[in-house]
Length: 145
Image (cartoon, rainbow, N blue to C red; front, side, top):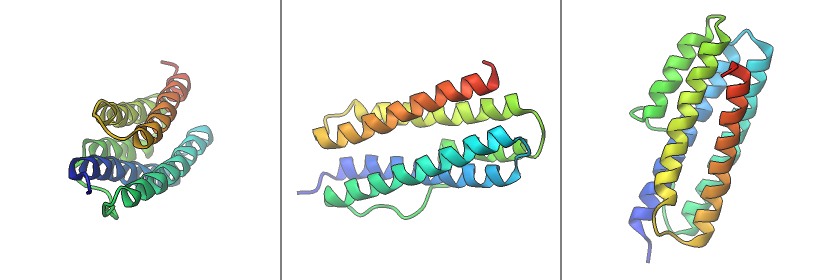
């Protein structure tokens, strides 16, 4: 039997991952700072890997994964703000927007991790959440926060 709540929560995270991957891709193309561009490229690759892993977990749990992001997600708004900033040269402001997006993503992961889901799902989500926490540290260093 498929756990619809689990599938819904995982698909919600998958939408966030798609949104952030697309946002990082667009920002990497627009940014003028080489170090920040490299960070965006790294985060985009990470999101691709995360989304592929989560997609497979949804299939294995008997669900149908979403195929694209949600334009209504709070993370999307963060990415839109970030894209707007990327055309400027204020790297600290850009890094702060990335931090805000990563914080939003991490909060959602923690919500799902707080639920009573199978150990294999929780292990995958914990691994991804830990990587997002590491991203926050990198961003704080980059921004001088």
